[in-house]
Picture 1 (cartoon, helix red, strand yellow):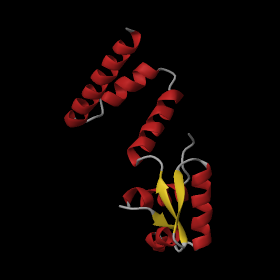
Picture 2 (tube, one colour):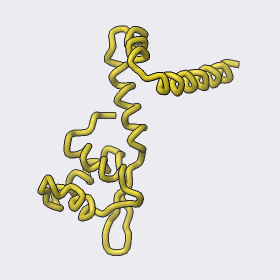
Picture 3 (spheres, helix red, strand yellow):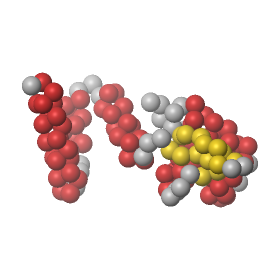
Length: 124
């Protein structure tokens, strides 16, 4: 999927941080420091919906918006996209692994172990 533009990312950050679906007005209010019109926020939300990034639902008198994936899912997509741009994927992965903290390395190791087990079951 394509990267989000700056305003799209700001709107998504509001939605990701919310504990419930948000209306366009609530999103605009959360971005008050940017002085955005509600119509601008509606346009951004419409674009995000067409990209499959948000889901729009009718809630009494207004539409509400919910992210279709987590912030972490989006970051994982960006990482996968960046890896796809690498001329040498293995070298890029090795360099990335060298930059993570011990806690992140442990989490990554566990995730890789799970991926290898799934791959082993799939080929069996």
